[in-house]
Image (cartoon, rainbow, N blue to C red; front, side, top):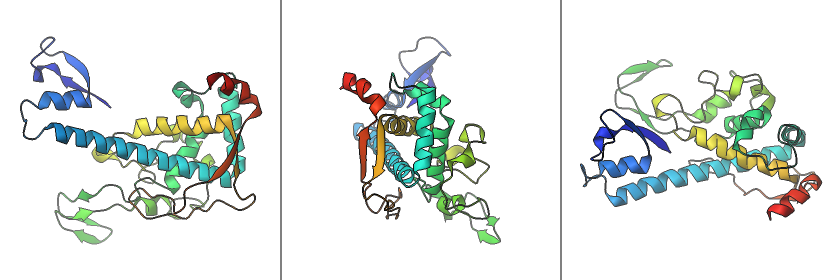
Length: 258
């Protein structure tokens, strides 16, 4: 994670008004001398730990949901493989720069986030002023929880909302949110700052699994159980189990890497 700060907050200025590109940890350490009681080493370590765990857990969960959906929809998996074979080829592994050329893979991830958002209730918000929403009076200071799952599975907003159809996002440039119908990372100033990184990490992980391996359900024709578990990040009730084998046309490449 990176940010830009004005260098005059540091004792080691490189020149007045010059902007310096710094990491989030750099910024926190620069603030530490001015507010040592607040920006303690323990606080900084804790903040970094929370960001790391929140980012890895949600990205891993989204990848698991995506693979579950692909196993239950093999025609989508084959279409994604074909796209990667055409755009990336079989002489090298896909990398981050390839993601822009894989709109169907992006659509799969967005559709997964629509059906199984990593934060189904988003983060709590507080009403900053009295307001009326849907005919209900909301007093100032009320804690608000946005039921994102309900919005993204609402039959009034989505055609066949319970069906896994990545094609619904192929026509949307970049798979971007459509108003407030789709906002798996929240929106506005309280939107998740890790959205860009998460989409790249999940895209690269999922794309590599699709590119390198053939996937099958463990129990043959029996569908993967898609029961949702309990928790803030919408986990699966049962961890995904699947059968995989290296794709014949990737054997030589993977043998060289290993």
